[in-house]
Figure 1 (spheres, rainbow, N blue to C red):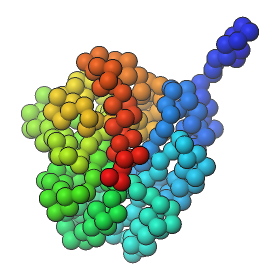
Figure 2: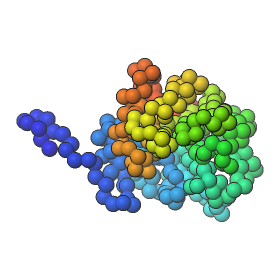
Figure 3: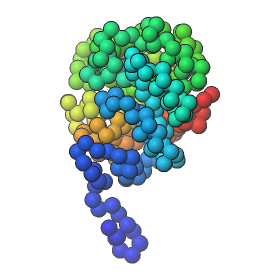
Length: 285
């Protein structure tokens, strides 16, 4: 809509062409509406393996998207999928969702990331200087393998790990001291020089007890920054699933506009600079 002679404004929300469809073009519209320049496309296995689809998006919009690969470590085709992702598609990011409801531990309840069947993945990730993002699921669940991550860091000292979703803080059970202790232990993994954490999906956990702009979720961000430092925290959305909880601009603004405990320079790091260092320009060093 044109407003007067010069100003043009977006009068209607960004489109969503179907209830089961969220193509890259729609993500770009949401990013543009929020003023987001770049995004990392992290896969969730509940969509199925989408390595080629993600690769195609990064090829069409290389200045807007970085892609991650997915591999089921127990699939007979795991090694072939890994080789294709790294050699043919050139991915340098892998995402492993361990969570019980929608991830690998749901498929394989006995799966441990620090045991022999997955060792080849970590060896290759270290050799190729890959970044590995881990969704370790809900606090206290089978997939919440904090000690196993510590073991990986000891075995593979050059391995780079991102813990997704700020280690899933127990926002709806904030008075449970045991869960809070387990959450702190996982967040504190980011004190390691090659571990970071992201803020994606926090509004989903918070929406069970509060609405936008999620004051309790913001307190967990504050606590995490105090524990591990602002350089170890990265903003993220977890779209499209999070768009059932908030608009894309709100997923940005609850941090960018409402985390008043963060100085402007700290916000700049959390909202992009840290992610670029981990996933983007400096990710191979």
